[in-house]
Every structure is written in C-alpha cells, then in structure tokens.
Image (cartoon, rainbow, N blue to C red):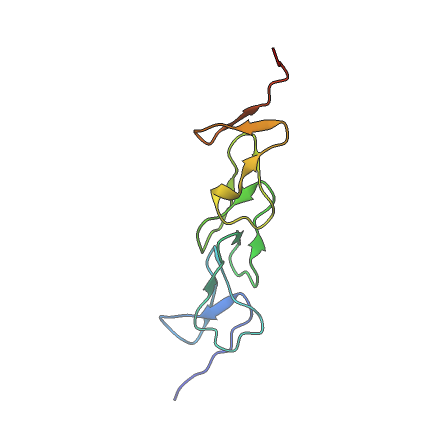
Length: 115
C-alpha cells in the first residue's frame, strides 16, 4: 500500500520515510499552491529566506545583494555604496551621492577643493 502525503506550503515530503513532511531548508521555499511538494525551490539571486519552512523568497533589502540562488542572507554593499532592493550582483552597488568611483572600484568623497 502506497501512502500519499500532502505537505503544507514551506514543507516537502521526507525523502527517507515518505510518510511525513520536513520544513524547507534555509534559502529555499515551497509555495502553498504547489501540488508536487517533493522538493523545495532555491530562492533566486537577488532574494533570500532566512528561516525554515518559507513559502516565499524575500527580495534583498536596499544596499545589499545576493549573487547566487539559495541564499539565506544578503551581502551588504561595500562601504560608501548603495543598491536597489532585489539586487543580484555586487556590480549593482553604486557609489553613494557625494562619492566618486575610483579605478579600483572603491568610492571616495567628491572633493570640494577646486584649486
């Protein structure tokens, strides 16, 4: 006799037993409306989930980014740089207002001295 288990959103069928459900791991999710709940999907780059059993991924907050799928945290932009919410690459972090980009990629304050 085959036992079919319907898991709730944020869960997947236990791979060892098949008769119980496990919470989706960090960095993954499973929508409450997904009929095949054998697997949890990885959060795409630019988003994350930092808790077990997530049903959705959260866009990375402004001034952070995530450049890989399955993130459970977003990486802060380097010093004096900012990015929009949902950024998926460090190159999305641009120099803040009042700063200029140097050849090494860092940002320094604009000079007011025009001698």
